[in-house]
Length: 117
Length: 113
Image (cartoon, rainbow over all chains, first blue to last red; front, side, top):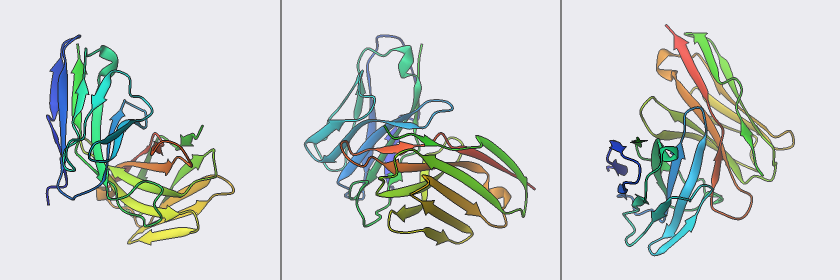
């Protein structure tokens, strides 16, 4: 099993450019998430999805967009990149939601390092 | 708003020592609490999940405890090894609303051979 795969691993963008971070999971998970992690800070939720065709905003959605056309894929789009979007981005997935009592494990990708200059 | 705090931010111990990492949260109405490990340049790996009805969970040399009334959780690592060197983060779900995990800022652990 590949688990959660993110691409690209590293990217440098110029201010105002756009790009898409790709995320794919092969575990048939319903829930998928995009987080960003800034130096010395905890992870913050950007967007999440509870299934194909359903997405919702997290804590810090401004400047980002997502789509979930299939169960496997959950791309994150950055429009008009800004220096404040320099960060490490993590995609994650799990079978059920965080409040599930079944204790299902959440799986993270290895991260995408993005620098906006 | 839920706030999750981990102190200290960094910790160095000699190999073989037992150690405790701390996690505090402000809203005790949590469903569960998770501990994660993050290696440099890598994603997070789930270590232990404690349900709100439980007091502790164990996995190998790791033992996590939860005291909801005091808003605290601890991760105990027995007989530390250099391979335990990593950043350890705790996280709690929101009690309601968006499907979100609130993460602490983590404790960077270095185990010195």
